[in-house]
Length: 192
Ligand code: AMP
Image (cartoon, rainbow, N blue to C red; front, side, top):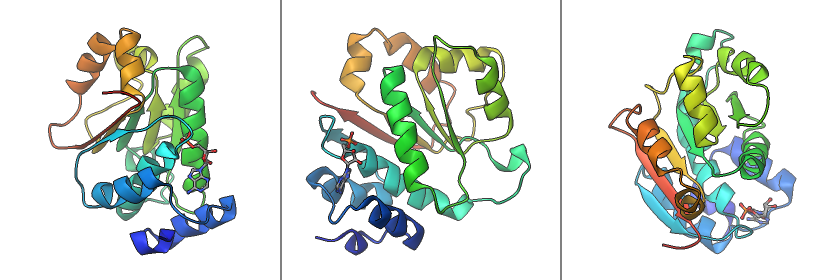
C-alpha cells in the first residue's frame, strides 16, 4: 500500500516524502482511514511502530479545513489536544507534529512541567491549533487561564497505559470535563 491511497492532503504527502517514508506502517494503514472518517479509534501500538504519524497525519488532514493564515490569536484556538505521560514523549510527538505540518498553516506547541511556565504562556497566547501536553502542566495553564479547551475537536491519549500507571487518571478526568462533548477521541496504548 502507498501513502497516496489513503487520501491524505498533498501538503502531508509532501512532508512524508521529504522524511523518506515509502509506505505506511501497519498501524498507519489501519488507523488512518478510520481517523479520516471521524471515528473514535483505540490503537494497540508500542513506540517504534509509527503510531505518532498514525494519529497526527489524519488529524492534520482534518484540521486543514480550518487552517488560518491570520496572525490573530483568536483565529487559532486549540482544536487538537494530544496528552502524553512524559515530557520526553511530549517533545517527541511535538517534533512529529511540526515535521508533518511543515507545509500547512497550522500552529502547534508543547507544554510540560518541570520548567519555567512563562515561555509556554507566550506561545499559547500567540494561538495554537495543536497542543501537545502532559496533564499536570496543562491543568496549571487551565488554572492560570492561559489556555482554553472549549474548542477542542480532537483528543489523543498517547501511551494511555503509562498515564494510568503514573496516576494521571484524576488529572485526565478533570481535563475531559473541560472539553466539548462532541469530539473525536483517539487512544493509543501498548497494552489494554
Ligand atoms: P513512533 O512509533 O511514532 O515513535 O515512530 C517511530 C519512528 O518511525 C519515527 O522515527 C518515525 O519518523 C518513523 N516512521 C513513522 N512512520 C514511518 C513510515 N511510514 N516509514 C518510515 N518511517 C516511519
